[in-house]
Image (cartoon, rainbow, N blue to C red; front, side):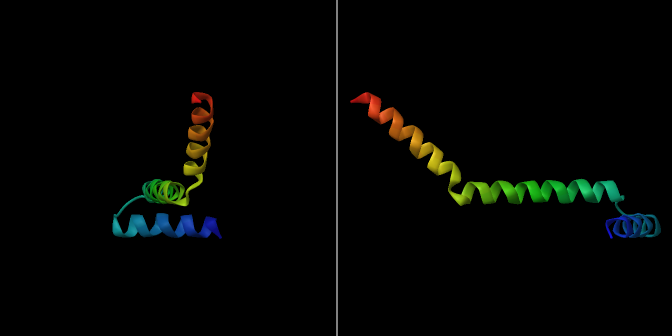
Length: 62
């Protein structure tokens, strides 16, 4: 199925003289990585690790 999608993208790009298939793929990859970054930032997983570090450092200060 992905083979057919790539063939369709390449034929569409050559017919319309638009963006090439690798350019579209790289653009989609970058967009997905940005969305993954937003998800990680808003998910709270990194906050838990920061809280654990703060708790450990405050225990040794006493």
